[in-house]
Length: 112
Image 1: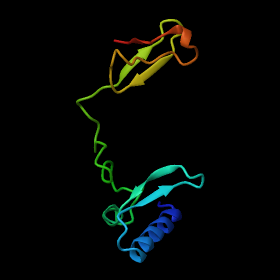
Image 2 (image 1 turned 90 degrees about the vertical axis):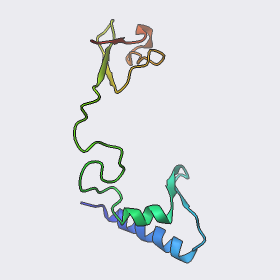
Image 3 (image 1 turned 90 degrees about the horizontal axis):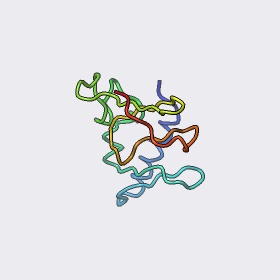
Image 4 (image 1 turned 60 degrees about the vertical axis):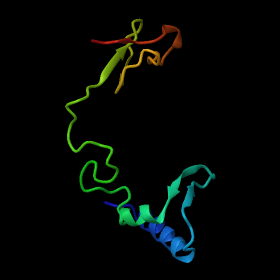
């Protein structure tokens, strides 16, 4: 179910683009003035009012797989001192996870 706030935001953005047809984009900020994102009329029209609502996985952002990927697997790391674990989608020996409870434990080791 779609939040009623989505319709309010869509209507406000469409109104702004109609009132100011030369606008290229609208910068979105939260109530504290922090940047959220940028909206263009093309993006708004393409979304067709379905922001945050999709009919199936990957239908909105084209970034997620419609099914479980067979090309990737989770990479698990564990602290050799206390056993704390972490899971990542990649392995890079320049950026190994560090034990969260205490950094003195150092980088975690790959679990095979």
